[in-house]
Image (cartoon, rainbow, N blue to C red):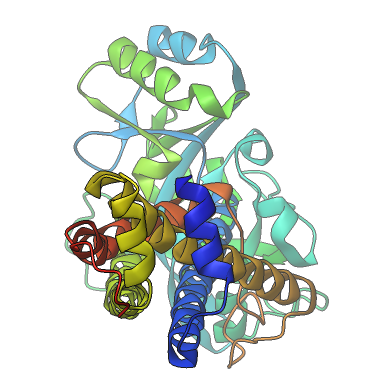
Length: 407
């Protein structure tokens, strides 16, 4: 009975045309709000997945680094324990050192990242090359892969190779010397490729042979800045990280990919939910239309309410009729809004109808990624807002006294 009355009140024409108009204005307002919420959440999802894909090309699934200081020494037992980790899919030693780079007349500061042969198993930089090949050479004749920003700053020509790329790094425990250059270790590299991932990486890193960087920095043979690990099952990352923390102890820091960039991901999540809260608040303000619509409907159906009361209907039954009427209006608006959002997101994903200005982005249009949980979240939010907004008009209807004289 409740559904019968609520659906008829929603579909049927009212005695006053203004009530019909207000009802559909309310549906339209909810539809626009629902569509905006879903589209905004989908855009945030798109940016988050884009950032994750970019960072996954450079950051490993698991990283072991020293808890204190710049470098670490791992015993043979610790290395065996790490290599015997269940589900291990890749192992790479890393040595990093800041250096002054010179190429012809160009100068810049960069981070030399020395890697071994396991690097391609734990990071996807090789798949981000825009020029050349991923060749790192040997400790005596090192090659290197440079970021696109460093190539632009120094004017490196991969194809012609007119000049060698010279790296300078301070010597450890260097004595006071008259000539400052005597306090520096220097070595030449041959650029073999250029990668483009993201500006922070492209302007900062040069990837080369681990032996060369270790010698340039004056480190002992087993000394490392970090160990990168790849795990076969991404769902087992937290479990693997916990196992490594127990095996290695407190002198080592074990981080998952999320923990390596925790601040960035937290900021992105915070931005997403702050925007969602603002739009939900706007949706709540739009719910005042629903209050007015239901209130006028209660006045319009005063005779029907009186007849129902005279036939023995309780106040609770009448309250449920108008509560359901409010929920029905909200649900229709949410479904229309969800359909609009689906069409807009599909058009954006397929044709890129809204582009990004400037040439500094890795993409040229807003990314979108639709998640079912976002649709469910928006629908739940709208139903809760509609339920609260319907309480007062439905309560007034339930308290209305019997009167067959009409409104």
